[in-house]
Each structure stands twice: as C-alpha cells, then as structure tokens.
Amino acid sequence: MRSESFAFFLNSFDPLIIVSLFLFMLKTILVIATMILTASPMTRYTVIIKIDSLPKYHSSGSDIYVAGSFNGWNPQDTRYRFQKDAKGNYFIKLSLDDGNYEYKITRGGWDKVECKRDGESIDNHLLKVESGMTVNISIEEWMDRFPPKPKAGTASKNVHIIDTSFFMPQLKRARRVWIYLPENYKNSKKHYPVLYMHDGQNVFDEATAYAGEWGVDEYFDSVHEKEIQSIVVAIDNGGIKRMNEYCPYDMKKFGKGEGNAYIDFIVKTLKPFIDKHYRTLKDKTNTSVAGSSMGGLISFYAILKYPEVFGGAGIFSPSLWVAPKMFTEIKAKASKVNSKIYFYVGKMEDEKMVQDMLKAFELMSKYSKSEMTLVIRDDGKHNEPTWRREFPLFYEWMIK
Image (cartoon, rainbow, N blue to C red; front, side, top):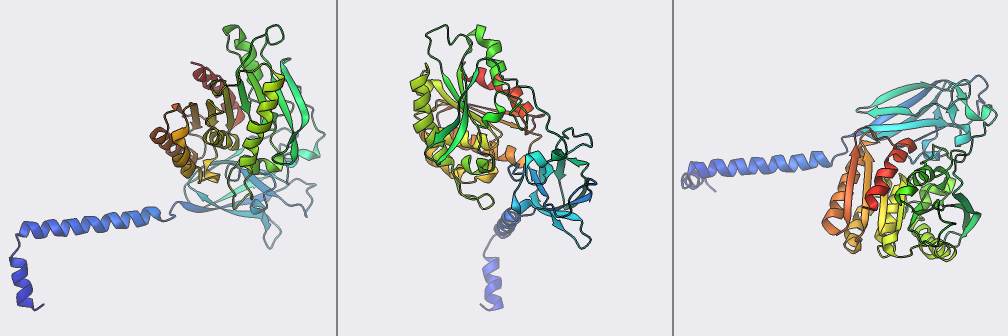
C-alpha cells in the first residue's frame, strides 16, 4: 500500500476509533504476557540443606535422608538421599514451591531418626520457602543409639484387634486391623454405624503410634451417654507401602499407585467381614470413611469410587499434591456423590495444600449435590495433635 493511500485509510476513521483499537491491542498483549508469566514456574526454588555436625559415633558410610511434608514423610526415599561434597560433608538440593514445609533427618527409618542428645524426640524442622536458600542444621543424636523406651498403651477397653494379619486378597499382603466397639455394645442388641479409618497405628493407641494418636476411642468413650456411638474400624498402614496403597494413581516419585486395590479391599473384603461378625448398620447413610494426609486423599477417592457405599467422609489435610489426577476424577464422578463430606486443612501446612483443598471443594460444590463443609484453621498444622482436636468437630457435624 502506498503512503498516500495509507494516510487516506487512516483519515477515513474517527480518531477515537483508532485510539480504542490501539488500547484493545495493548490490553490483549498484556493479558497474553500475564498468562505466559503466570504459567512459568516462577515460584520453584532451590533449597540446600547442609549438615554442619553429626553425632560423635556416626558411621561415615551411613546413608542419610530427609523426610518431610514434601515427600509424604518417607524416611528412606532414595530421591531425598543426601550427597557428600569433596570434604565429606552431607548436603541435599531440593526443588520446592514457595510455602511452608516440615521435615526431619533419618538414616533410613523412623527408628533411626534424629533426636536430642538424651534420646528425647525433637520437633519437626520448619522450612518457609520464599526464595532460593541454604539451611544449616546439626544432628545431635540418632534414636537407635538409645534403648527403646516402651510406650504405655492408651487404647481403651473397648478397642480390640480383629487380626494381627488380616489378609488383603486385592493386594496379596496382610495387615493388622483394629476395631472399637461402643461402650454398651455387649449389653445391648443395638446395631451401630461404622467408620473406617486409615493409619490404624495412630487411631487408638499411643504405644503403636508413630506420630501421636487421634484418641478416637477416648472421644467415643466420653460421649456415649449422649448417644453418640459408632463402631470404628482402623486398618494399619503398610509402612513403606503407605504412599502406594493410599494413592490410586501411579507416581513418578513413589511408584505404582495401589489405591484402587486398597479401597476394593475395604469395600469387598473388610466391610462384608465386619457386617457379618458385628452388629452394624450396613447402609450407605451409616457407613463413612476418614483419614489424614495420604489417608485423607484415599478417603476422598473412596467416596468418589463408591458413592453407593460411603455416605460420609472426613477428609483431613489430603495430599492432593501427589495425585493431580484427582481433579479430573472429581469432574467425572462427583455428580454421582450425594453424601456428607467434611473437608479440613490448616493454614500452617504447605500453602499448596490449602490451594488444592479450595480447588477440590470448588469442583465438588459445582458437580456434587453432597452436603459439605470446608474448615480452614489459622493455627492448623499437619500433625496428629491437630487432627485429634478436629475429630470430634468432624464427627458431631456428620451426625447432625
């Protein structure tokens, strides 16, 4: 186009139109640029943890690992094993999103976790990631250097072990299964609702708990006179298999997901056994499931996979970060879910956990007709004492 023709072309338009077109194009460019910047992994940071000192009798050939909220608290995760620099000092580089994390150092197991000089347990290390950073820590002692201190059992008289080796045909392995029977179970002919829980080691007894117990038995013992009663069935986690059994999808970091088979075990093997041998209310309204962290994730999945079986769920601090496919699962299956669901997360957990919970709740609200509540506590941490405090609020909301 010749210059005089172009000038005529411009002159044929109102100047306001030209300005409007220019502003529209500028706005479009800015939106696209923002989208590109937002999509970029700008909040991923390198965090280096260095160990400044080790116990006097530490074996120089020992492998050391970090276990925390960023890897499902796996104490022997090879992806989180420390390396050594030229001087023989231990260090590890982590790639983490900004947010809050907790962690501890181990030599490959919770019996070999770091501790104080006198053998007492230490609190989790706290890590607030806002930029690339280096953290220097000292290990005072290792727990296995001290004779084990037997914990006093805290399970109430109403807690029993069904089997120390209950066979799980869907997974071809066995597991300890616990049961809590209401205070007046023996002296009545009443039938009771049933709550299924994961991480059974932590549900009833401090002696078996690896991170503190929920005190579920103490709670039900204390409220039985109010007619708040339930049978509670708790399945131990599988230790190194915990991440796999509590996730329905294969994971790059942790391997094959076995959550499908695990939930099938509860629905097709364990529930029929419980219904046959105990006085239960078998219907959906009186069958619920609950758990925290990975146990919260698999409880969420259970109610999506078997909406006709589970009429309620307590989903505490679910590890949705390890299973992004859950959001697709919600869109596909939530329309069939019509239950009571209690979502809980704490602001003192990983910030992404709060964001993921909000996203999941939004999707459930959009696609499901379930009665739901979302509880976000300012002081909520990712630990058993927090979930123990929340449990009565969850259960009493469930039975309203």
